[in-house]
Amino acid sequence: MHDLSVYLIVGLAMFAIGMYGLLERRSLIAVLISIELMLNAVNINFAAFGYFVAPDPTTGQVFVIVIIALAAAATAIALGILMAVYRRFRSINIERVSQLKG
Amino acid sequence: MNNLLSNAVLGLFIFLALGGGVLAVSLKNIYHNVLCFALSLLGVAGIFVFLHAEFLALMQIMIYVGAVVVAITFAVMLSPPMFAPPRPRSKAKILFSLAMSLLFFAFFFKALRMSRFNINDDRTAASVVDLGMSLMNQFQVPFVMISLVLLVAILGAIISAGKGTSK
Image (cartoon, rainbow over all chains, first blue to last red; front, top):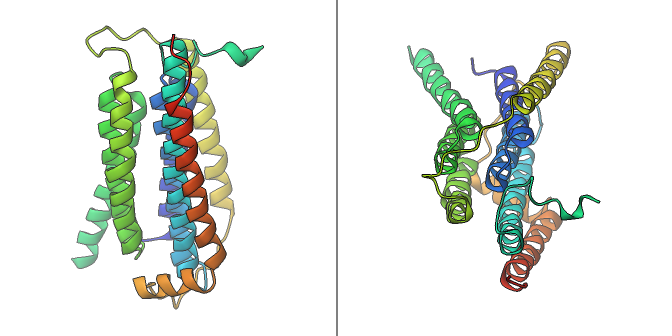
């Protein structure tokens, strides 16, 4: 079971779960959670390839560290935007936030 | 016996990661979503341990479970009250999302089945010392860039959350 394909399939399934949440949920918080799930799926893939395939085992881990830092930055920005959206629209339902829709 | 035990533990972590993920996107209560998301992140940390990336597992727990989930928990305060009955979801949207994600899964599953990777047989686990050396030598520029990006992101978050008209 400790095999490259197992980890890749787990990452793929997690990405699909995150994609479902991204398409279906209406709360901005749930959308943020879905994006983080997708980033985690990518992290699993990078760690698996870094361990099983890459000649230098640190390469994949460095990628994962960069992605985790970017995800933390993305969360900070998303929460800032969420506060601004709530102040403007009194709601965090993404279907009510449609002023820029044109 | 040892192999069987490690397989069982790996299966448990995979179950935690995927089951937590499914609950995190499917439950109606937003607070339950956040808690199940934390569960899923812990499962991913366990998977990192099996990939001989102990430092990543540590970072996963510290940054994700310790910082990101806590920050999201504070944002739950902005959601509608939990005693209010959840608004019904549209069936068409659920079906569409389910179909899209299943299509995505099936497509890439097929691609995975068809592809061959040349597995490195004499693989070694990277220690934390190796990781630090490689961050300071080979990956110096990304390391510095990341700190810059974090600084700018924090400033941007403060600016976009702090000021603004309230009506």
